Image (cartoon, rainbow, N blue to C red):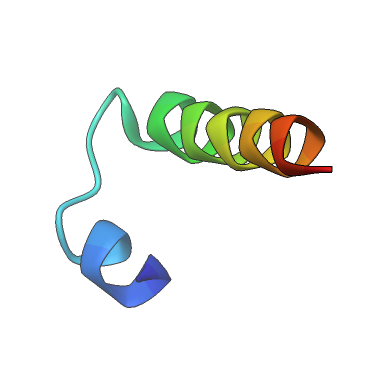
Length: 32
């Protein structure tokens, strides 16, 4: 997954990483 992102690095690169991590964190909290 990360490799796919690093191939097209852009201004929103880190924002998308943090956004995905945030969504995953929310999903973990809601499932537990």
